[in-house]
Length: 86
Image (cartoon, rainbow, N blue to C red; front, side):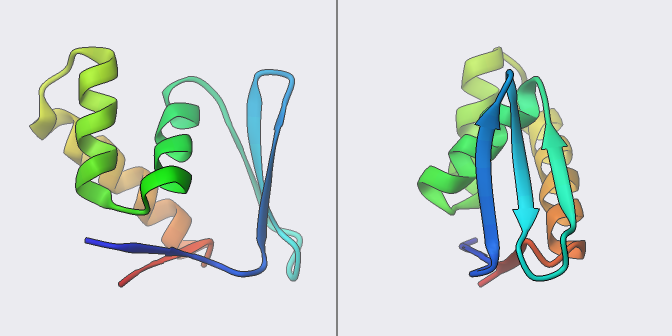
């Protein structure tokens, strides 16, 4: 599944975090830990399955467990309208 990033979204790496900021509404997410890796894969691949495989590989975890966590993270970004599934 493809992912489209909102045009009004910007991001910065700052002090070990990634900050996602909606320039229109001022909504933001501060990401730490594995969410940083997930977000970096999102920005690189824009593909849910590639994100899941990349995170599972990096952390040596089962893809089914990883899928559940990644999908929950992506859904939280979708609800804030930071991304949409295409």
